[in-house]
Image (cartoon, rainbow, N blue to C red; front, side, top):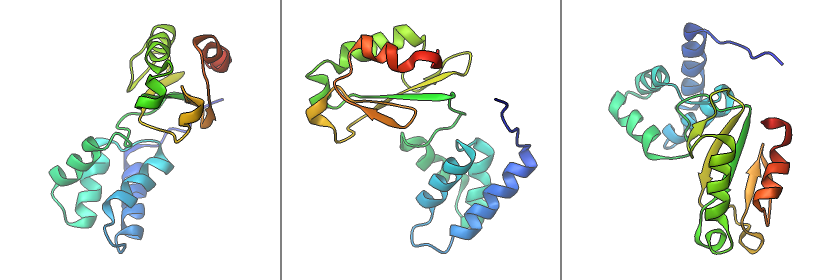
Length: 159
């Protein structure tokens, strides 16, 4: 499967289109950032300047929002994103050792992507699946009562 490569000028033009389209919303910054990430995969540093220009904000203001919220990715994600809940309910039933296993197993820490670009590992603070902890989301699908062995099976060919 080949990836589509978007050149910087094309990306900047699309970010400007998204920002302009949503600029009329009340409090448009977060919806714009979410829309950029949804369509383009992440919010790149040059995107910040484009969004700031459209909204007549300082680049530092937009940058501050992007870096404050963990929801915004500033680099491309791997082909498979693995999110492990680290909220108290999941931690009480094994999320900590599961997270340690995941990091050792895939070879990267939370917030990072493996060097081969296959897996991005994220920590999440509650999927709302507390009764079935520890909860893990793999490629957008939520799983409960995940053990290290089950996580290995879920990752399957993502490795």
